[in-house]
Image (tube, rainbow, N blue to C red):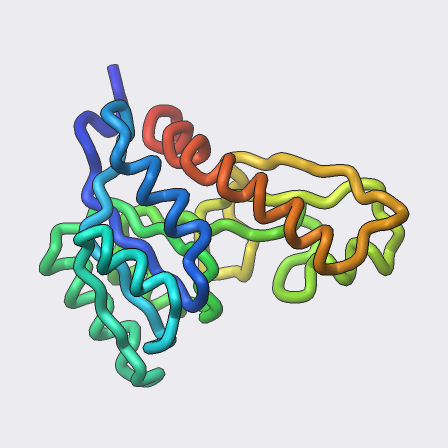
Length: 190
C-alpha cells in the first residue's frame, strides 16, 4: 500500500531559470506521477521559470517583499491545500518558523554530494579540493541548512578538463533526472 495514495498537491519555490521546475512539471504530467503541481511561487519577480509555469497553465505568484515572503507563501500553501513543497533553485533560506507553520514535507535539490559542500559555490569547492566526484542530492528540508535526511543522490566524475561551468552542466543534467525519482521514493518509502 502506498504511504501517500493519489496525486499530491504540490507547490514549487523557484528563484531563477526554472530548469528543475520544467523537469518536475514534465514528471507531474505523467500518468504514474505522484504529484500535481498546483502553484509556483518565486521570490524573484523576473525568474524565467515563472513564464514556463504560466505557459504550462500553473498558477504563479511573485512575492517580492522579503519581509512578507514567508507569511504570504504560507497563506497560499494553505489556500491551495498543498501537501508537499519542492524547492527548485530557490535561493532563499526558509526560517524554522516557516518550516513549523507549513508542517508538511519540504524537499530541496542541492548541487553536491551532501553532507559535503553545504551552501553555495559547490562546484568551485569540489574542483578546488580536487574531488574525484561531484553530484546532486535531494534532501528533506530542516531548520539546519542542507542538513536534512538525504533521499537520493547521484554522482558524476570530475574530469581534469572540467571547470565550474562544465561541472555545473553535468550536475544539472543529473538533477533533472533524480528529482522526480526522489519524490517517488519519498512519497512511497519515507
